[in-house]
Every structure is written in C-alpha cells, then in structure tokens.
Length: 229
Image 1 (cartoon, rainbow, N blue to C red):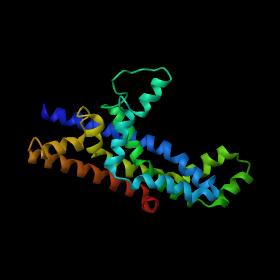
Image 2 (cartoon, rainbow, N blue to C red):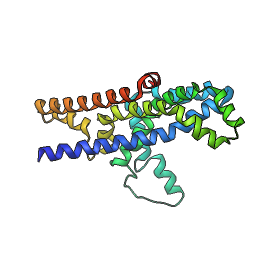
Image 3 (spheres, rainbow, N blue to C red):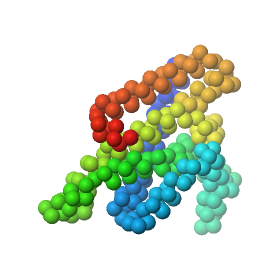
Image 4 (spheres, rainbow, N blue to C red):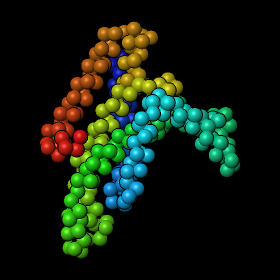
C-alpha cells in the first residue's frame, strides 16, 4: 500500500511538473521573442519588468495567488461583477489547477531568460538570408528562429521541471493539503510523521532521478546545452 501511494504521488509530481514546464515555455517564448525582435529601445525596461517579480519573496508570490484565487479575491470579485457568482467557494484554490497556475507564475521569469539568451544569439544575417530566399515571417521563424532557439527552450524546460518536481511550499499552500507531491511527502516524513528513514529514501530517489535527467540532457545537447544554461 505504501509503495502504491508513493507511486501515485510520484506520478502526480511528474504530471504537475510537465504541465508547469509546458505552460511556462508557451507563455515565456512569445515574451522573449518580442523582447529580442520587437521591443527595440524598450527592451531593457521590459526585461526589468519580467525579472523584478523574481526578486520578491517566493512565499509572498505564492500567497498573493491565494488571495487572487480565494472566494473574496480579485478574480472572484470580477466574476461576481459580470454576473457569475460562485458564492463562498474558492474558484481554483485547494486544487491541482491552483498549484499549476501559481507555479507557472513563479517560474516564468526564469524560463524567459534562457529563451531570451538563445534568441539573442541568433545571427540576424540568417533571417535576412531566409527572407531573400523567399521565406515569409512564419516560414523564417519555423525554419531558422525556432530550431536555433531550441537549446534555450530545452534548458528552460529542465530549469523548471527539476525544481517543480520537489516543490512543497506551493502544493502545501495552494493545494490546502489535498495535492500531495514528492516535496510535500518528504517534508511530512521529516516533520509530523518523523519517519526519517523513509523520508531519506524518497529524497535519494528524487535526487537520482533529477541527476539522471540532467546528465541525459547534457549528453544529448552537448555544447549547445551548456551554452543554453
């Protein structure tokens, strides 16, 4: 039974990490693309706006989303104003969705930076050559920009996936004890359960899993992977 419960928690952690990684990349890539190719003189200002939230306490950023998604939060007030009333029940709070939304918000700045760096390294002459050969903007993006920025995208995925697997503060606060992940399980074993051997075993399994993933990434990406990070 314990093994089955552990497998269920591990699987949930993998799923949450996958969706958080995917959503952050899908949101951060357009931001980074605009910064490199469309922001012009506003690049530094916009880049600062993206980075500044990362300087705020992690706990405060998580708690801010608890306020937003709560029954009396900003989102609930807006929906009530337009005629959608949820009563006193929270919208997404204390659910896996709330955990995913909060983690996406927390990690977007860290995902945007490696993608931004990868896009900035693209030689503009390559895009000019693509246009000269008859490519439109979409074709140039698909054939030149996207392939050359993939090392940064993969680096961003690894940068998010690895720490999210072991997250415990966000699942604990936004999940309300209903969304157990590897991090919260380890925290409970060392805390209230006082089962340190089991907690140590889980921590070791998680560490090995993460190391295998990172080593596989570097071996597959070679020098491009190292430059992306």
